[in-house]
Amino acid sequence: MRYLGPKNRLARREGVDLGLKTPGSKSHAQLLRKLNIRPGQHGTKSRRKVSDRAMQLREKQKLRFIFGLTEKQLKKYFKTASVKKGNTALYVGQFLEKRLDNVVYRLSMAPTRASARQLVRHGHITVNDKKLTIPSHQVHLNDMIGFSKEASQKIPYIEKSLVNKDVIVPSWLERKATMGKLVAEPTHDEVEKQVNLRLVIEYYSR
Image 1 (cartoon, rainbow, N blue to C red):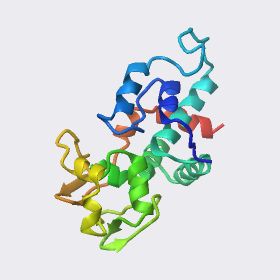
Image 2: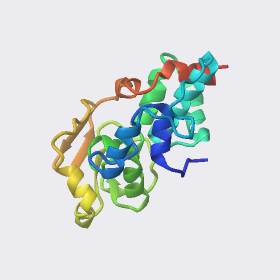
Image 3: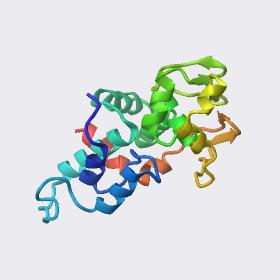
Image 4: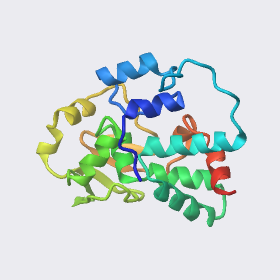
């Protein structure tokens, strides 16, 4: 089941910014002030040493929360990746990065993955000029991503995201104006900056 509670609580629980709040917003600023304080009345107290199993669980949960996945979805990605020859962590990372909602987010067409997922579900996004409403859809090489109508681009938070000059689009994506394209197979480098995928693989391989 997808988590629907307070998003800042998740980030504080993991001790890292999970990208769940729009950068520059009051809520994001509040999170950054309290990021090192665990939620709950004992948040400032030291915690006992965690086991290897607990570390694997925390990395798995972190990955789920970053991409807004259910346990069932993430486990399915692992099973699909594990039957392929090669680096399972790389394949899991690629599956996640090629999700339509994530591609929309990476192209800076939405400020967060949650907002990108909402755009897709509400029919604002097209793939090769065809409207798609499935956030988990796997984008393929040379697929063109755009908005289904010009009015979608005028949504305030979308308009602000499109003109944000601070966002760096990954090398495996290309964006011109309000259109984006998958130009190469994604790496899992960006995911690895936030999550230790090896520990996630170990968790599911038990």
